[in-house]
Image 1 (spheres, rainbow over the protein chains, first blue to last red):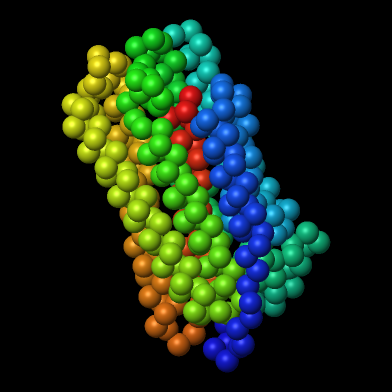
Image 2 (cartoon, rainbow over the protein chains, first blue to last red; image 1 turned 90 degrees about the vertical axis):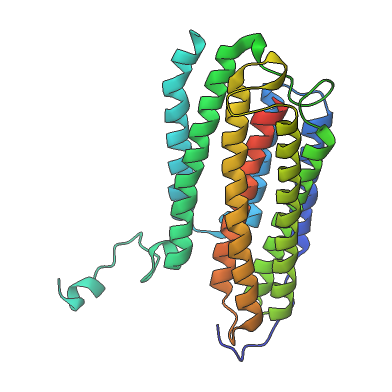
Length: 90
Length: 210
């Protein structure tokens, strides 16, 4: 960046909205009655908020999001799918 | 291949110019690292789930009444890390706006959040070890696999936090001292820090709450 470029006021509003949403979800996950599915849904919402807003993934190109997201999703599913049959017979 | 041949390669869907996916190479490599590291943690958590399923009733109560750990402490740790992540997002936003003072301020606040989190993790470990826990022994006659996974997973995450603190310190000092602010460097450091937060979301949900 050019050293002579002028500083401008950054916009923090969306960051603190995301922070508040993360806190609400965390408190709900801990203090409300929960089971496997409510925890998984809570985790999913938090991941979307952190990756989308904090990591700015929502502003990236679709190709890039697919490369990152598909990789993790594909191998995670493969990992669990290969282990579940053995896990269920234990 | 000649230079002319390289520059004339313009497929329809390629929109990244000379950099892949319109990213700097540093940011792209950080994302690739994050994908690989996420799978490593995914492997740990999958193995943990497998062991826990096999242990049945021998698994200890982790949080809540009669649990091994304090709900308040774990919730506070999560709060601190989420807040630290928000501070880092502010630092990145400030760096992109070329606001040096704000970038330095938010990066140091992020660093402070990370130090507090790590301190709480040290307290949690020392408390658990004080109860007699070892990587091969879980207090209360519970399945020894619990303590083994606890030290492995939280230890690995804690190591990531420690590395993140060093990265943040270097980033903050660079932002403060160098003649030119480097928004790309702040953003790459931020990606790593958010990833540490992201991993904690899974650990907190899968390891402590379930």
